[in-house]
Amino acid sequence: SSLLCTENEKEQKGDGAGLYRPFLEYAWSKLSSEDLLVEGNDQSTEYTTKSVKAKGNTMPNGTQVQITIDAKMGTSNSPITYARYALLETIVPNSNTTTTTKGIQVLNLVLFAKSCVWGVDLVSLPNGKHLLAIDTQPMSLNRTSDMKEKYEEWYSTYVDGIFPCGGDLSEATRK
Image (cartoon, rainbow, N blue to C red; front, side, top):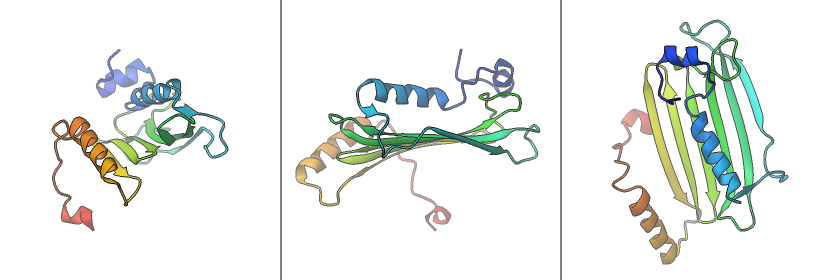
């Protein structure tokens, strides 16, 4: 089954995949299965799902906006010290998981590593507006030259030339 469906196909299929849920499930299970994350730590949050009634004239009656969050600590031998996600989905009536593109879909995934913080935001708004933001920041302002070299190597390997710059922020956004 394709992840790219029209609105009618998605609502007819009712497969509950959600727009960003497959990516989240893959990434979270991969991090967990590779002995990078552990559960049951007193500093992690308990898996939580909450929902509220969706607003808007284009939403079918009973549509819900659902947020699901989870967090895990890194294992003792993992470069990741803490990981967390928040998944926001607009859920159609009479379903616990089938999403609609008439609402918002958001995935925020953040990994705190020993040397940097890495985050990704996948955002879809009604009318086909999408945003992908990947961000990484060093954990220390007092970086050694070794850390700076590793960071620059990582950036040139995984970011520069692969993801084009989206340009400067608009003046309204900077405010």
